[in-house]
Length: 162
Image (cartoon, rainbow, N blue to C red; front, top):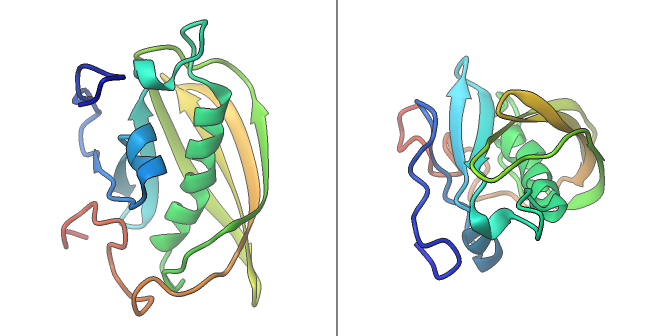
């Protein structure tokens, strides 16, 4: 709950739980939610609230880009065989395809295309109420390990239930 959004976001699809990403920027622009599909495919989403909108009542492109910028690295944290690492963005390409409106459920699922010794390449499709809203591709640096790099639930979403 905040002065920007007088009501907390509670209307999320079944199976989604709050994501615990540290830092005041993410806390201010959230809340974000996640669930695992097939045991390792991370889906993330958020309900467009007043804090996310521009003067036209549409989700601000900056919010969608912020969501996309977190989506692929977070998806990588749940990919089997990859160490859990901080993945700073080197390049992010966002193609906006349609608007997300106040109250819409925005959903994305990242895909890891390739990793090298120092980089991770990924992409994602983000939908708004089931319709394509943006297409994303990015390059991320393999940064420092998160903890020892083996945490099964680095975002604290599933409380050991994965």
